[in-house]
Length: 387
Image (tube, rainbow, N blue to C red; front, side, top):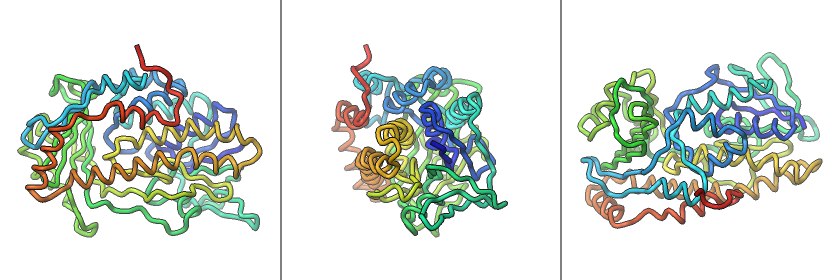
């Protein structure tokens, strides 16, 4: 099958790898001229590691990443509220978690495609989806060049997705009332002793720190901003968080400003239909959740694992294959979206008493590791726990 993928983010590149391995002919086009994109990093939880293993990429990922052992939730003064045993979660799911810079993950995905001769075109302007009388779509570029394909995958993000507009009309992402400042840095000395996650909670504010090594870290600072037309200024990052516990001051001081990105955070409402004619949405175009889900990259990778299997199971019946793919993926991704919204609602409370109650609840709870493992492995044949 000839397949064109719009978007060279995690979902687009991972789908390109999985579909190429399944014998399809793939071309990827991307509007941005930057092959690796911005952003800090991510924890690739065990369900993501499973897919990367299936794609033959896990050794490369392991070499570029750290293996977090715990996630510690703290208040803004550094008092421990709760600890998630990531090592136990990894054991129950049978695969390790990996903390990695986004650019390193993108380099590994793009490297596989380059080695296997899969064309990935960056900086392609003026993309448009066109249709004939039969409703079959093709991709047109600004110079009038047309890319015809049996299947067009829209892996083109949550905010300006051609595929989403084609499938759903004017269905828009939703601003969820907070902003993120995102950065990544490599320091000259260790600033943390443990490879893991620190998640600091304040009043309407949050600061998350993930160590890849003791001196290689990525971070995300967040603040409530209820009105999209009154977002915080970029420099508020430094005034809001300058008095927070270590390693936050070191990270803010040493991360170059041009490596820090301010993002107004949106997600998309779950929808029951991800395709129309020969166009299918994947990744954030189909199911963008808030960063509070922790599952954005993992769910994009799961799309890449399931799609070639659905195409093979319904060979020659594209509509049935795309319907089966949507049925396989919609419930799990919708649950992640809704849980992430609920969690964000608690994180960005601005009432002092409500924040104290939230922190007390967190301190009284043990994170449900088994429940997390069951939910995250659903739909994947992940096998028995690791030894």
